[in-house]
Amino acid sequence: MKVIDLTNLRRKDAPVLYRKVYYADAIVEVMADSLSLPIEFVVEHKPLGGVEIRVTLIDDIDYPILPIINHLKLHISELQSNGALP
Image (cartoon, rainbow, N blue to C red; front, side, top):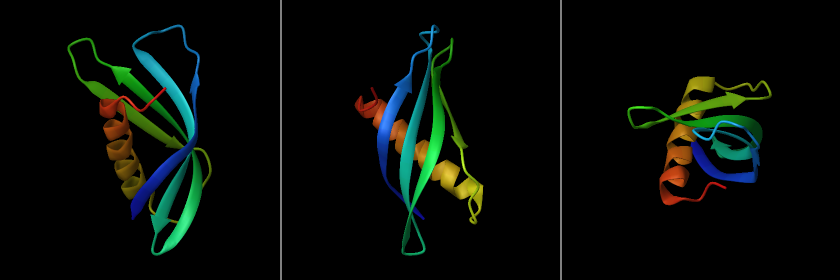
């Protein structure tokens, strides 16, 4: 299982500055097969420091969800730390 890219990345306008909501299509490679999964994720800055990332898959898939969500969280945290999120 490998996250290749996030495409169609768009940010939802929110009145709260410490919480950012994004929508994207995740390109994921599962057993030599590429899947495009619509996702929603939230990047929230905590009051005492640190960042919490929550990922929601919009469609149902025929694959265990937890490994995909964990890999997506790692990929999103790398994008966030590199400043690649809008």
